[in-house]
Length: 364
Image (cartoon, rainbow, N blue to C red; front, side, top):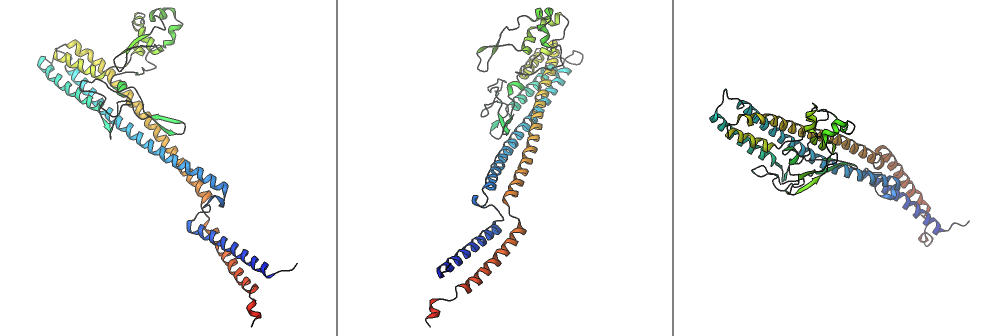
């Protein structure tokens, strides 16, 4: 085959272009310390790198949400700790004024004034907010949930935040549950199983109709029919269960803390010893109600702590995977760079000798 001069020039040009392209790619990798700079470098690795970047970005957003929710829950628990102290102080005052031996009408009047202060303090706790969001208003976080009389203007909503792709945790607890005792769960071991009413004729008779609706009051003040659950049906059985000598404490619900403090104040001002003594049990229930709410908040904080650990580990794993796919090996890169540089110099030297004769050399 005849080798023309043009073929030599084309081959030299192609080889030099190839060597310079490889040299440029290696220099770019050395400057960025990245093996995969554009999708054409390694399409499969580039796809995985984009996926890991998405995971890292999503994990960072989850961590921000978890941090915000944790701050909200911890401040709620701190506020309920103050409410807990308020109830304990009210109980101490009620105990001191529950007998006639060391108290009189004057001392009870003075104690009533202190209970009024505790009432105001409880309202302030209910209106506590973090930043510009109220803690205990449910979904309604932009206005105070309680007025000065303890009337609730929030709702029963729980704001849930995502801690992972398929998991969420409520970051608040509505004031209707904590302060008003709505939807408070009774202890499971506080008495007999309510399902026994379905098999025991005597208990079933004491309970009454199983599906009888109860009339409740909604937040806007309107009446509404509320179907009875097994726990609610136990309330209908309370009088019958007591007649049969069976404890009905499992059927008890929550108490309105503001009503308890208000009734205690009324009893103190009226110098009613029996009313003061009755308030002691209600204060115990209110205290247990707050403790239960704090326990639920604590369990949510524990869940968020576990989610934080999981998310942080996921971030480390994703970044490790990204580094493995994307980062260049420095030792290998320097070796390839030196080899390519030597190849380029050799190509330039041999190409110069190959194309050295020219037309001008023959026209001398």
